[in-house]
Length: 397
Image 1 (cartoon, rainbow, N blue to C red):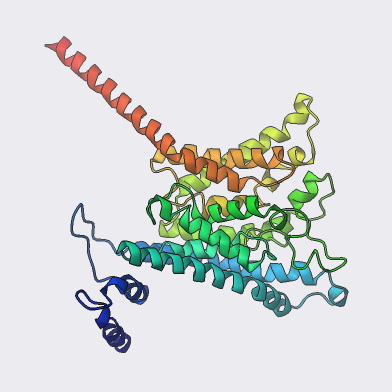
Image 2: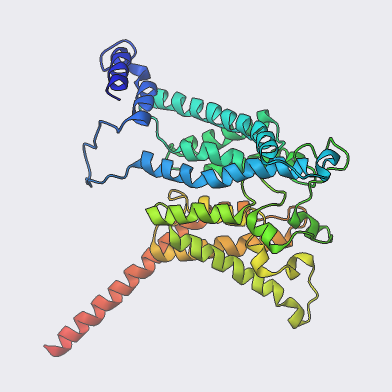
């Protein structure tokens, strides 16, 4: 490591203050801080000594995403290959499925990081500040929530929109009001809807190879078709869907890591699933109230928690500390409404039988308002207690 340290110090000499490449120092500093602990400290404001910094937090989230990503690579290949005649008799070998999925997904990750980090570096140099590590997570999340066959140029455009409009327009890392990864997905969905919805986008080559179906569970329910997958298939994630959103088991593993390390907020996660369960139970209760409902409203509430992007969205995107609520009570309200609205949108929008993206983005917008009223309510309670205490003192005197 000392040799690497010496080489980096030699490389960065032209970028030091006063040298001809000083303007481009943020670019070389980003490589330095990626490999080593940053050697700069804050100069004003409150100071807290802690082993945790932004880089460690972001890397922890990336590690938590790895189980879902690896499973997504295998499942993406399996969902395609197991429908081909040559695999019908003996099944799909693990490596065949994994390699097929990896060949589709790794280029998307490369494009996401290449385009996104390029913009981040450009803004860092233009504004004269250091490159932040926030895009380490966003750059991985964007491909993970996309359909398997989305063209790479659409991924690139979605990244550009997310970084420029969803992040840098508000001032960069820590200033955005919307989750950047979901901003990218929303852009792709509304700009290129035929590539982001329907029954042919969730399984590789489903639109090109005869006999290959890409219908998701929610898509089948919205169309009034029978669901053939078991609850355990839904839990393990052996179903069609976005690249890394299908396995509740892998998402649970990532959630436990985030909670154990204190990176993820348990209040938002727990309240998010409670809100989704409550909305599911309300829909399930419609027949007892004399309302017939449909296949989506009659879908068991616990199954609603396992399919679509709900679990992935609540664990990895609703908990974004920048765009989520900040107060403890606000987190409970925010998380509950994310889950509640996600199931509501999923059921009431048959053209797009999923709602977690819109549910989280909607609550991102209202998170500051929730915190405002939580704080104001707390201030009002304190004023009432002060007024009551003063009254008691006056009475005693």
